[in-house]
Length: 409
Ligand code: FAD
Image (cartoon, rainbow, N blue to C red; front, side, top):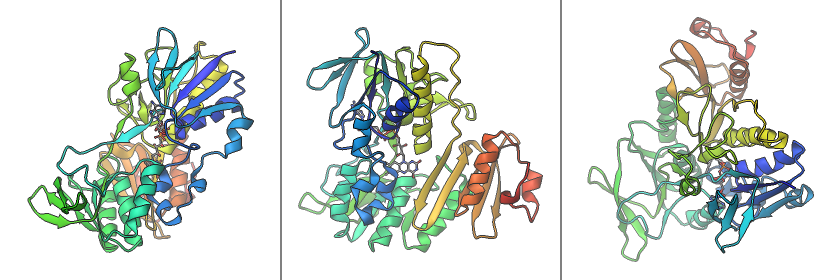
């Protein structure tokens, strides 16, 4: 009997285990996760979870799913290393387990900041359910919330904390929010929106120190321009780094993620990597990248499951080509991205008659994607067109009465 071991019981790992069974894989499926409890979804943690606080609603599958599908789930169990010559994983307690194929789905961890005061009580991060619980226990009492980083998670949290009545300030080093992922027009839209709901947004402003209120608790921040601001809760949301240490220590090539080929296999044919921890080349992108999204984690898991269920040593597996899409909810604004829009060199901004905001993105004259706010129909249509390889041209988009939802190819 063959054994597939999956390290990381998050979005990608849990999906892979489920998909292996759906694909008819009959060997052992062993899923190790270092977090306690059942695998859960992270997106609500920075959105609805702070208000609702119902962890059961986050679960990716119910408890019986793993038993019913003969998936051996080991929660609260960290894999310490990989013994590649013996094809074994080594647990923290020293015990070892043999694999025929190993899949690394270890995700990412939050970047920390090398600044004084980062360890003070009240300086928090958000990646796990445990982090969210910690924040939930404190946010009701917090009067002044400071968020370091104007990316998706920082801004979602800002909108949520405003909704709970806190004073909220965001400090972003770059000259616009979400700069790595969205067009300047989309950044500007959200900068206006956050200011309109009372978020005190500071661009081109770093944080050089977190101040001790005197009792080991956070009291405020010193900004890069020397100003001091008060805060009694600080969220560090300065991006993530791939959890690629296991791969690196096992001698696999790693560069901002565990490097995989077009079928998501590492340099070792017995090891694959998926989700936030994997660095891969997407046919729609430029060069090697990591994508931190539910879509990417899910689709990569499905692709690897199909390959492994068929017998991974066979050649001729189709390359990974999952069409990238993403969402971020900030108060009542739903940002959706279809395609890899970050490399756009030309953009067309439109508003639909339903109050939605759209940024069509082109690179080298080709349509590469659409960013929308509160325009789910347009997002879905763009996804369908782009995934089918149908080109939209600028002239059509600029027609005054053009509506993406009525587009017929
Ligand atoms: P993860 O889900 O992070 O799972 C990896 C797991 O592996 C973790 O549990 C980790 O502890 C475990 N692990 C690591 N090392 C080991 C080890 N050595 N042994 C055992 N276990 C180990 N994406 C969207 O598309 N839309 C959103 O709106 C969105 N919102 C988000 C909001 C928040 C607050 C966060 C944190 C993320 C959000 N994301 C969103 C991103 C999305 O959740 C991730 O891209 C996705 O979870 C990646 O799945 P993964 O399985 O690769 O990693």
